[in-house]
Amino acid sequence: MKVVIIGGVAGGATAAARLRRLDENAEIVILERSGFVSYANCGLPYYVGGVIQDERALTLQTPRSFWRRFRIDVRVRHEALSIDPAAKTVTVRRLEDGTEYTETYDKLILSPGAKAVVPDLPGVDSERIMTLRTVEDTFRIREYIDQYHPRRAVIVGGGFIGLEAAENLLGEGIETILLQRSAQVMPPLDYDMACQLHAYVRSQGLDLHLNTGVAGYETVEDGITVNLKDGKEPIHADFVMLAIGVEPETSLAKAAGLELGAKNSIVVNERMETSVSDIYAVGDAVEVRNFVSGQKALIPLAGPANKQGRIAADNICGREHAFSGSQGSSVIKLFNMTVATTGLNEKAAQSAGIAYERVVTYSPSHATYYPGATDMTIKTLYAPETGKILGAQIVGFEGVDKRIDVLATAIRAGMTAADLEELDLAYAPPFSSAKDPVNMAGFVIENIRAGIVKQWHWQDVEKLSADGGVTLLDARTVQEFKEDGHLPGAVNIPVDNLRERLEELDPAKPVYVYCYSGLRSYIACRILAQHGFDCYNFSGGYQFYAYIATDKCYDADPTHPCGIKIEK
Image 1 (cartoon, helix red, strand yellow):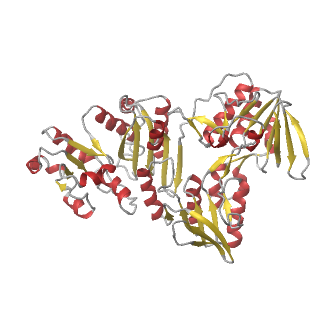
Image 2 (cartoon, one colour):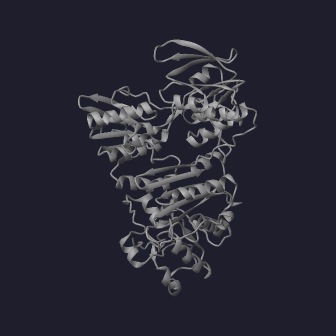
């Protein structure tokens, strides 16, 4: 059996290695257009910023190492020009000399990946405009920095690559401006969770411009001018990095007559088979099923690509293996902050027509009496009727990756909030609290589902502040109420004084309670409910709302859930 693989990196390289482990006699050929067959794509921004200094560290495998260990014929700088499915051949060009030849196959795996989106705007072909997608892109940017010592850069796009590149350019002492067309960075996050990220990256020196579209570019003698839409002032910089997303690289598949789906992605079944016999496809170029919603989706991440490569190889070798879908679990480090997501966010749930509710909880990373605890905000989406976990987002510092992995596993296993309550998670003061943040999310959800407490959200603030038919109750201390801001029209009764001051509240009016994080207001709600009041707890608390509704500077100092600063 002869298997030709077009494209390396995560999907193609994984498929090749798995094929060899399953079939020692198969002839395996990888055709890779770039000069690198298997590299750490996610590590590229860190080479730009000098965090990774040895370029060899980016290369996971070379043609020589593939041959030595697996006897796989890797041909870099070989571009597949066309596929003839009837003849089972691929026309290939050697980029070193331009000559062409024909390669036959029994089975073909397409792993072309995705390419950086470059919008058709005036001046976009300037040499001062760069993308960061390949190793060659990375070397070009690093060489430009070393040679010209730029003082100012503009990054267009606030996804993973744009934000990581911004951190690394700032680390090189380059003034960095990030332009984001929409109202938030990091599309996997909901807007409310992204607001904390906005405040934090600005506190780290990033000049972040939201709701800012680019009209075009002009190369000038000393740099490049970025012209903005809506009459906004142009921005001058030494160079521009485009990081506005990727699109499937599927021109080869289209020309070969393969069925294409969303955004020209390659349609595959659960075996990673395309619409054409004996041709498989994996990685960023394929359309997959969202594991939670069941809808078709593009989820260009390394983890799913690796799994798909393995599954394609299994099926080629006669081992039945199905890809059950991707839930988009991801994590990013930004300066000292960690941001992670898994499953559905609100936008995705709404698009899929899935009924959901959400809670926002605020937890320390470990026991607060042990030094070094940091804060994390966790937003968990769940099905109201069953409590099934649909998605989660976490913004914090220490321990974020651990909690998102637990929640990702819970989603994969179809677990409910009641299951989260019962999870037996490892505890010691340096690592967690006896009630882990994941347990806490389960407790809050089940309290709501059981009717023990009702909640309200930040979107309700404007309407309720203007509604004379309700009472807004601030359960924080008098000092917090005066110094840290409060909601318009709110009455301040600290939770510890509430029982003695119930007569100050009108029992005929619903009471909407808030505090710093939602903990004290929950206790206040339990007191009020047992005295006959109709009351609601503010999800996420005032500290969460302040990042959304105000220009609050990010405060990284850890606090207890009650808002008191944790001693370092």
